[in-house]
Length: 384
Image (cartoon, rainbow, N blue to C red; front, side, top):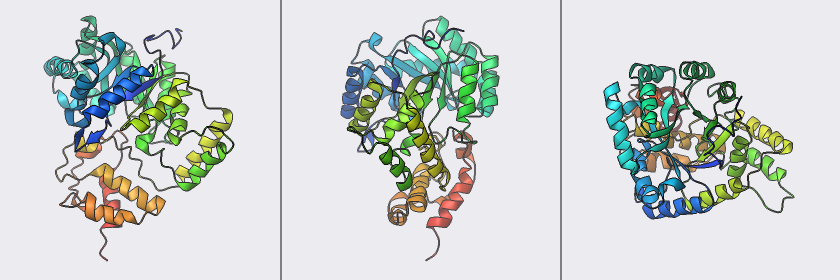
């Protein structure tokens, strides 16, 4: 079989800029800081950028136009965009939407174009609308260089898709050390399907939406002990990125960086990448054990549930889940005030949920959001 390094040779660097969590200032994308981060990222030798139309409410693509594509030569970067299910209803709508994405990004072609967030439910729609066939036709026309998919489901679903569409060139999956053996995410088995079909892997959510940066005390103690004699200390994010990059079939690790501090730390980790040692893998196993003993809501704050779901009651679902996790697992009593005085001021309480289920249909983690919101309401909305 052709080696993974021979496939998609332009992926010659292992670190990508995920543009779902760009820096924010006064409620809008901070263009100045984003430009600075783009320049620093490329100056460090990296060049892969990942976006989708729904990121930042449709503004991620135009931010890349303003901060990347209008300021750097086209051959100096690789740009990935995605076909998301909510933006087309039939085959005839796909091409106009695709052309609007090219225009929004300010480019004439995408290096990679992914069928977005594939799962057992929406895959049927992509089949009926001939989305894969349309993408392959656009590739033949030179408007896409490589066709792939991003995936959020169990391994048998991915196996079916890759069997029916062997033309897929790359697969983007969720992978991090907490979810690796989690039955609800199925990361290990999904990764193994990619290996079976010879498909290179792009990793998303390596730091689990930031959850692996600020660790519980018991987990932090494990990593602190691991490097107690080290001259140069590594960040928690560095261990998370290195875990993902240590898999032989992983060609790219994405990080959604929101400020320059995060970017510089990630660049320092990935510029001279070193896989985890046996001792480090053992430490990560102990950290994973700590997480398994906790009552965490496994939300990654991808925000699909609020950005692409249009909740009728405008409930800030990721923020409420984070608030709950901090109170329950970190014993942070300030979260009661945050819930009542900040997050739900003017409405959007967990108890306002109408149980319509729209959020659950789009959640990549397949969370039972309605039941979880009920749990949040019980915790924060009890009568004194």
